[in-house]
Amino acid sequence: MQYLLLIYGNETHWSKLSKAEQEKISQEYGAYTKNIAESGHLRGGNELDVTSKATTVRVRDGKQVVTDGPFAETKEQLGGYYLVEAKDQKEALALAARIPSVRWGAIEVRPIIPHEMPS
Image (cartoon, rainbow, N blue to C red; front, side, top):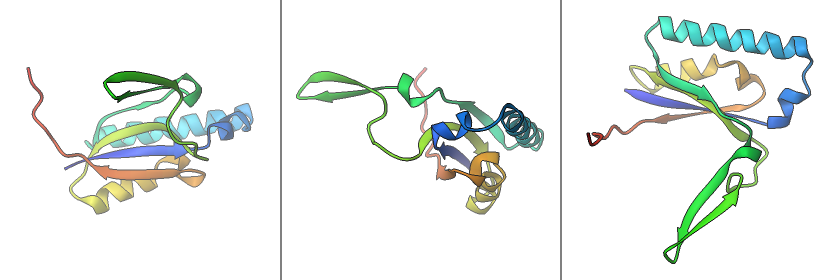
């Protein structure tokens, strides 16, 4: 079964770290990504750019409404994700608990509902 591991944290946290701390965390992410790729769990993933570069689209009364940034004002922002293959939720939670930023943020673990994609 596939799970999406959504990585949440405060965007300002990164800029408050020293270059050495940023490099250490980047190395931890690299090691984690390599480990779950080699174990066969990794199906995809990416870091997301900052929310100030995001745009939200809605359609209301048949009209497209575009606003800057994400919809909700929150203390934590979605910063990236991993798409993983896990035998069950317990294994997905164990993978999420090893993501480096779990120490200062939160990882949402959500099962994927597969759908056939049109060709």
